[in-house]
Image 1 (cartoon, each protein chain N blue to C red):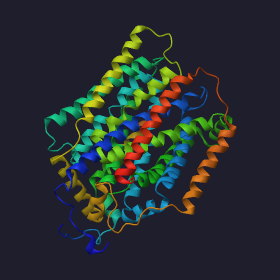
Image 2 (image 1 turned 90 degrees about the vertical axis):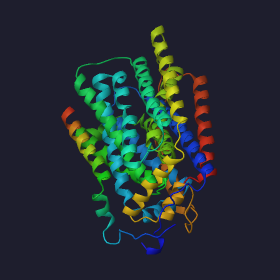
Image 3 (image 1 turned 135 degrees about the vertical axis):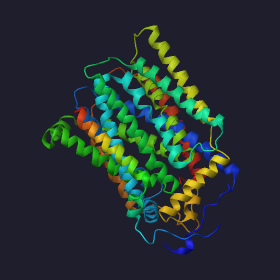
Length: 434
Length: 41
């Protein structure tokens, strides 16, 4: 790294209106993340029972892997990913680590649901937002000099969301197995700790200037590698293969779930970038609300349940919306933004990354001298291969026979697509996806 | 903007990662998660 590029990140906010715009963008990304992460549950509901949870998770991760390469190739081009890696090679290690954390957490949730049921497990692992606030404060100067109102908004909002999540989970649970309750509680808490800690690499990457679209392409190697290792070690190679071939009718639906999940995760990454992990995680945790809307309205999950169940659903939804609102109105401005810049300065010096580059990326723009991202034949090849694989599995898929309400599905799909369009356009116009 | 000296020329980015306390927190949590998975299995 030449000496000339080493500079110090400006200690003053260059443009307060730009900072506010980026905060709003981060909050909008958090909302879009919640909607898409929630919608990702819909295709998985089409899958009938009888497949090992480990296999379901592995197939979804294969869909995720395809999406994590094809979407960045389509949006910015792999040349942008290569340029980011040349500037910040150390972040490959962080991305792989984050992917491994995700895979282990996801596997733990399977055991948690099996042992204590969704109603207890979901609120326990949703505590990841509280851990995210702690890590954000300790390591990345988030909420420092933010004032008590913002503290109350973020922490109070996260706690209210946890309470709302608990109510929703109780309402949506259909059974409460308690064969190994203590083991299930540990699994759910473990998943929350792993997911809460996974955001340390996220924040590290975005404070150092890496583009979220570049980060996810390496994240997915950790994710798929760890998930494949766990599936093989749990089931064995031959039984795993047998399960995969016997489940070929539903592989497409699971992979589609993975694809939709990636769109939500990309928005989540932009939320973590522009509002930090203390605010980004709770905002994207609103996915539970969207998941429940799909379950109730489209798949008729709570049909015939008592008034108390619907009271819990309405109460939990209202609490979640209050929590989301409190966090959304507690954006980081003023002195807190300057503390973020101190953290970015520290990362820039530690890893020898050009301060100009870090500062430009924090402001959601390209650094001077950076080449404009462009797509090459390789990018179209990646997109074509991913599309082809999805098309092949789609030809094998069978539409399952279950209760499906088209009207609410159309409304929810339209709302989710509207968020994609609005947030995607806003990201493009404000940051060109940086 | 004021110029400051780089500290990465003297040591590779691997050393920078391994000497970063932020790195060991997720690593420790990952190890704990794998142990927990082994335990509950």
